[in-house]
Amino acid sequence: MHSSYLTQVKDYLMALQDSICQQLEEADGAEKFQEDSWDRPGGGGGRSRILKNGAVFEQGGVGFSHVYGEKMPASATAHRPELEGRDFNACGVSLVLHPKNPFVPTVHMNVRFFIAQKEGEEPVWWFGGGFDLTPFYAFEEDVVGWHKTAKQALDSVDEAFYPEYKQWCDDYFFLKHRNEARGVGGVFFDDLNDRPFEECFSVIKAVGDAFTRAYLPIVERRKDTPYTERHRDFQLYRRGRYVEFNLVWDRGTLFGLQTGGRTESILMSMPPLVRWEYNWTPEPGSPEELLTSYYLQPRDWLAEK
Image 1 (tube, rainbow, N blue to C red):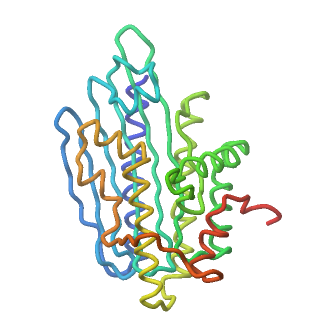
Image 2: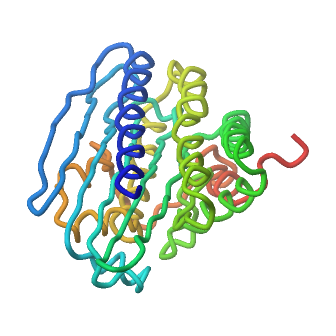
């Protein structure tokens, strides 16, 4: 029974990777994803797909991986001590897209499944995932539409999920060292196993299938917006925050590196260009200042909408 769990999830995830890549190629209109298949010493491997220098996407990666081994990494057992001494299988699809135009937001999506087994004991399995949006020049219409699509997707399984997972996303994608949200949020969940397998599985399917419905309308609205060097400089500056989060706080990055995953694939989330500037602050009342003063303040984007 439990091996069929893994097979079902893997089949869905590989088809999801195919579907998302096809839709993103159509949205970009210029470049295609190049696939890089890899094997992990110790067990497993994956398919990393990278699109570079497109008409819309400066760089983006959509990766599928399935890794397994005899010992859970420290990042997992610290979080879940009952996994000590179990072997594991972990599979997922993870993507990050860095658009060229500063008016198109950076975006992240991940859906994943873990199963940990030990002879003579019941397997421990769980799902996790979510998606979140990181604009540089934000628009209320985009943020509300993003959250509305997320809510509709989760409501199709259980209306209790969206408020809980929205809050979890706000809490998780937060740069504690900056006291600042990474973006305008979305949904995030982990350790989902307190319902029957099929119901838990339906949550990652709802999230995975909703991603392009949530993101591509924003791309379409903003991709041809004229921009200046000032806009581009601010985009590269804000990308620095993205790098900081991924290297300092992201549990997925840590898990991948500690399991001996392929570094190139784990770090494909990094932007191709980025800049830091010492102690920079935006001009009061500027569009750049509006990002942090309004959009990066967690709020109920769907209130009275």
